[in-house]
Amino acid sequence: GLAAIAYVNLLKQAKPLWSRVPLPPIGRMVMAGALVGLVAIWLPEGLGTGTATMKDLFGGATIPLATLLVLAVAETILTPASLGAGFVGGVIGPSMLIGSTLGSAVGLVINSIVPDSGLSPVVFAMVGTAAMLAGSFHAPIFGALLIFETAGSYEMLVPLVLAAATGYAIARP
Image (tube, rainbow, N blue to C red; front, side, top):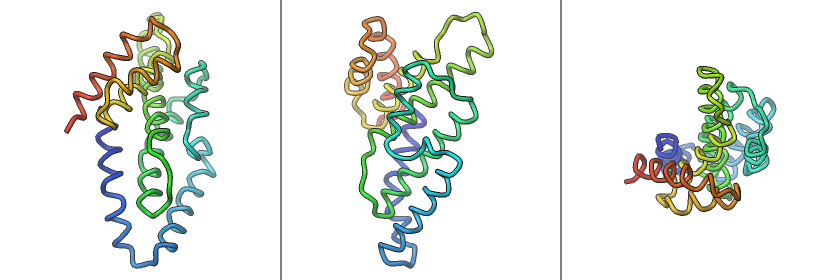
């Protein structure tokens, strides 16, 4: 929910901020592209829509906690920066990446605190994605069903619906 609020607010504020930069539109795009390129040198997972990384997390890949957090912050900042500067692109894929990385990070933290919990970071990644989608787009059914379709598991339906409802409740206007 809170990540969705930050993401949506940055999306709204990015274009007005870029319009203050005293360059022609192509110059703003060059600056944004250079920023994304610099970050991508150290964090190539941040390029594109992020669905490959999200699918890796849903498949059980283990990514270090610090990388997950840096990736979530980078995607939250770079997507609005790119779109605000004039690039064309979507906002759903990046929001799914933000949700999956933050969800997986929460799962890793919980498992480090309670190692015998039996909780899977994969479940947290899926639940985080549903919450992020519901909060970002004010569409809880969309968030829950999109990830349910990806998971293909009826056991995930209730956690996904609860997460989407919570993300929506926290981020709703």
